[in-house]
Image (tube, rainbow, N blue to C red; front, side, top):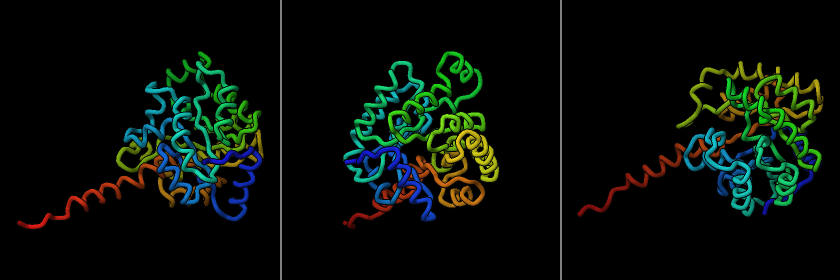
Length: 281
């Protein structure tokens, strides 16, 4: 069963990894088997959130931003399925902090009672732009509401990770003095249903953006940890580039860990079984 940790204990675990010269790796887990073998692979944190459910059902991760299900209830349901196979790794709840149907403080307290040690803002309006985004902001369901929810999580002793998509949002994460800024480069490219939009974004451009976001976040909190995620950062060699050219010390892999790596081997395994001939009559 997953163990619960204090904010200070999670931070100490991550800093120990960084001090030893190893990056922090977070895996998304939309199923128990994803969580179980991510832990055996040595990840530092495991995130449970609604897009993982859709992703591991074969749908696109962005289904998690649509009104197909109750994102905050999915976190609870997935916890009941994933937690029993986790032994030591701290667990992150990906929450919809703008949810107007829930009182966030008691909800966060309940997640803590379930055994979650950390929270992050996913699903997030940060991936939404244009008129729809503006009208979400105008009606009190914008990005700043997510930050306010994460500040409550910090108050009650949870480790906090803030997804941000541009320097202005990174500044809000820093001002809130959250533990981690996750620089989100957009939907991950690669595999069978990866982002085509992200194919036009190079690692060089991603590194520039991460550096701009880092600068803004550290104006508010100089000790914030910087992680990266998404867009062109799909494979281990991509993370190596980010560690070399930015101040990022960690990576969150969702599609990169629990979708892309299984697509080809699973297909090939089925083909191998199918290609075994029957005995000739």
